Image (cartoon, rainbow, N blue to C red):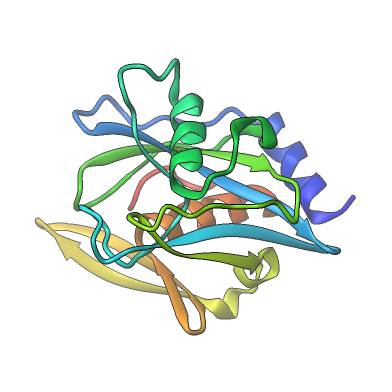
Length: 195
């Protein structure tokens, strides 16, 4: 069984965890995965410097829940289409990961993992997306690419995660989501929030 099939099997076999009751705004992201040739790959985006939040950061396509969204999966697919032009019918959703919170901006994010065809034509929204990144999954599986820094915010300690993918650094909630997915793939229990 290849790594993507193992990931799909483990995601579909587990019960994702939600955060305790919270007042955060609900949001959802899509983790698009695909095979670039034979290489299991993850698609991410780099946000523009003009977006309202998380300027210039590496993220997954996604955003805040809207009243017309039927559920958070619909939020993830709608936002993905708006940001990179990937139609919902081109995504085979495998399931969701644990809900995570953003430490600074006050969102509770539900990540969905979905297989996409590759190559697929994409149309990044120039107001939101500066660049589309395709990163081999092996980058995130190699512990040499992960750095963890201990930080304190409002008196609470946090692990701040960084994945190095030169010239890019993937950090914050995106790195925590990836770390959680890697934990599922490797059979580890991963918490759904910063510790």
